[in-house]
Length: 148
Image (cartoon, rainbow, N blue to C red; front, side, top):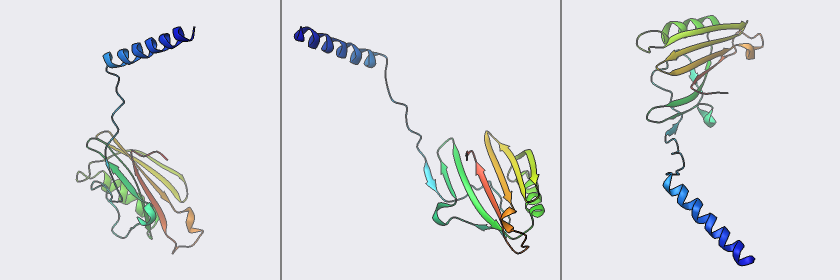
């Protein structure tokens, strides 16, 4: 009885290995890419914005045919000025983005969504951290093909 069970197990293992070999069973290739904290060249930023790349607050990951990134900036200008900059500059032919949606959710919070060649870019502008102080900084988060 034990010998039959061992032979049956061995037979089933051989069948499984043969079937896997014949069907070309392979694991999916891993996405290969480069990880860095450099912003993509087709993303404009206000000249007086400060890029926050300490402790990987900002990062990008890019392969041959795909990319993803999250970039954090602080900015002393107004929310209106930041929104105007991104809607004007991103859609300029130099950068080539198309504005898909502008959401002014509340005072101090704006979200702009752009698209280009299969990429999606979200610009979040947050003034709520100012706490009523005019000298406090806006927080600007730019995400490309990145989910929160």
